[in-house]
Image: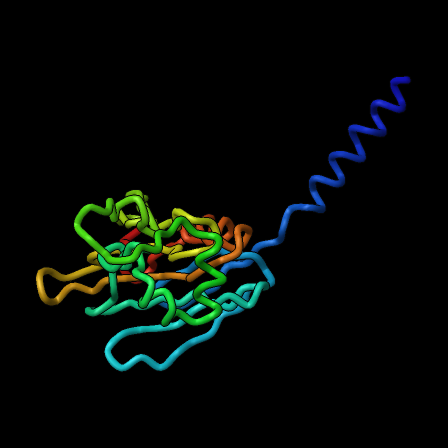
Length: 193
């Protein structure tokens, strides 16, 4: 009987070890990030900032932007409230995505609607290396923005260097892996060790 128990425990240990995904670190010069090994790096030619990203195994695109004009996605969270005319103008893909999200379609948009109930994302303050960042998470799974925003890597006022790193409408597993990866970022160029 003891041998059977030992065999079961041993088999469970082996299965748990093999089911863990392997990771790799991608070096973007300004920062490093640890991601699943089947994700790949790409770079984009930016005009006034350093831009690049990652393609996931699900073919999702995760894009970062480091520069003066990097955007804060939390400031552009548009509520999913549509009048019938606006809804009719959405593409078929947009309508399909809306089926998974909390949204409202009304005859006319009025001041009596609680727009906060229909936002697409929330954020928490998260320490990313030596900085406080906004960690942005969709309210509706697989619909909305996932990522981080750091208001100032260096500089002040109008000379700030900011960082954003986002993905849109990510599958649940990709979203989870991306959030885990964001927490591993090492801002080599900006944090002084």
